[in-house]
Length: 117
Image (cartoon, rainbow, N blue to C red; front, side, top):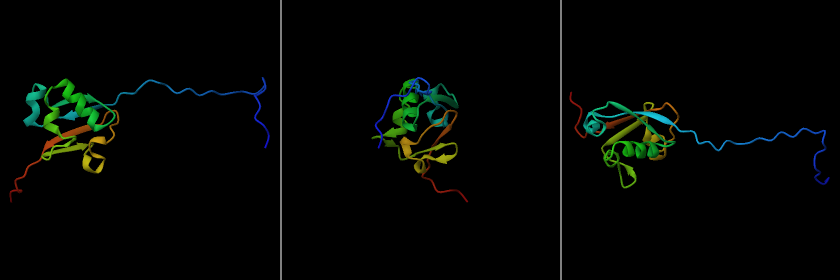
């Protein structure tokens, strides 16, 4: 095996640099009627984060108190259903589900009543 040598002046060296800029992901969050008192009755709001947990943390930063209605003990509350682009987050990683820029997050209250015939 040959020893490594510095490249000659005639060789071209391509240096790649990685950006240290952090890209912010912005999601549109649909708010159910029961939680709109936190958002001044807004049906939808925007929040930032790379994961669902970060989006909910940003929501709570913007609308104090909404976070405890969504998360309890580090998990989604039992009677809250959340969807990212119409996909149930329970199958996407829960609170660690990744968020892409422009994603639609829908929060729905779960009901424990049986469906009406």
